[in-house]
Image (tube, rainbow, N blue to C red; front, side, top):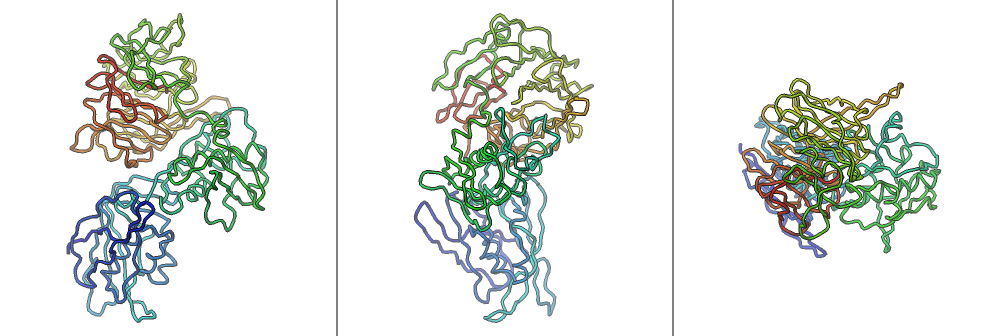
Length: 625
């Protein structure tokens, strides 16, 4: 029996006007399910409303109606529950899991009903690409999907009606419906500093102390998915209060006391006419001091920036009795946390045709002649093939032209280069040191690809006497080909070559101090960040949770695209093509241009403009980091 894929039906809301489309195309009440075209990708501004089951509808119609109700913008899935028996409706938890299939579920009878059989069983099948878990975290998972729906005839006011009495927990959708219904947002937590790493994860900030801070803290983006038409602002606040996702939890902390939630009875939040948002909390936060309260508010303000429907410039946190706990503006929040941009300037860096480090301004609308940096790396004392500039732009790390030595030099005129901080003993140049990378703590990272001794190294503050070999779990025999650490210092992007393919993986950086004060560094729980790509050749962080990658899908050609660090692909962010891209660099500030090394030399892509050639002869473009 041929499977049938859902078609898009229902009402549509565009802008401020409602346009109701016919959503009641007749469906067969019995017989086989016929193959139809899968849903076309609808515009992200389209709202879909479910229809109730028709009186005396057959089992086929009930199955199709239920699956379409799952694609609606019904806040509590009230209409979808009408297709279930009373008992099944009470036991069904749609928030538990959202399964994403390539084309939506195909449906067909699981078996031919025998004579006298009262129930009907239908199989849902398809190719799963990912799922969203109960924490609203996106998790790629390319597997075969197969579940069943069981229907019975239930007595009701209008006689016996077919209803679903057995179904899997959660919701199942096609990719196009998922991209229409859900929006990715970053909730933010503070990086768990090395000196406080013994305190645990998200809830280590419990208690009622003042929470005073002596320096700016680093925020870490934790991407989750919310339903973009169902009060995404309140959803985001609730998700933040619930704590970080399991993957990120070991390396971040929240300033909200344990079990802090919205005050009982609060259903929805909305800013007032002055874009100030009042957030009533339960009694767990009643005794928080002012300094700590403002850090809590800062987490909220940064987390709400990604909510397209929100325009919040001030947060007022309230106690359980309604009194004011504290107030924080956007400028106050920015003063509490470290800037997310790469460095104090907007300069871009690369190597010229003589292997010297040069820089150019990133704000100009046209490419100006780059200038050599002061210090030994700009003087050409040693020809280099790759480089990384520290985030404070006071020093740079560079790999020698043959890949064997890593140098760290000051960006000050008259400084000397000194001895390399590490050497690779690999025989082949391609098996030596990767391009280095600086994290937000000022630590320097590089991988040695020596087949006899592959290793990932971290130099504390870039110093040769503070070298740590990071333990990387999950490589499974693969070799690290490229390294890029996020600005927050707790996530690392790796290109890993294994079995003839090079893929993008994201790992969690953990630093632990023993009783003897010795620091151990590890990279844990590697996960795929661009599972749709068969080969990734270059990458760079391009925001709190976003990367820009150069690669190709199976059987495809090279392309540039954005990916989220959770493995999802952001919609509506297409990049113009570019020939022969070998290296790519991006800033955490999306107002600054992408910079690439391509067949045309050093090129860059300012916002709203096409690719521009900067220099015909040049390599290794980077932003600080």
